[in-house]
Length: 91
Image (cartoon, rainbow, N blue to C red):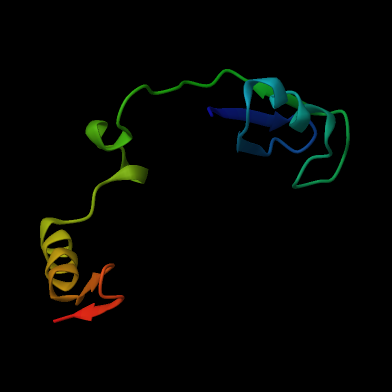
């Protein structure tokens, strides 16, 4: 599902909504989340990104640092394994 950008013409409040293509007009008919007036929301031109968002390194979607990833992997490796046949945790 893509993000759509909207702006209120009354208070200049801008926001984004994640919604289906068939539901992209719903925020236009809804009241503004900031000033609560109806009929003033317009859809703005928005860009979209195909592929892995982490690949492009945008500020809002950076991967965790390598040390954090390694720490998580170490903790996962130390977890006891569950044996489905025995129905219990193995060490």
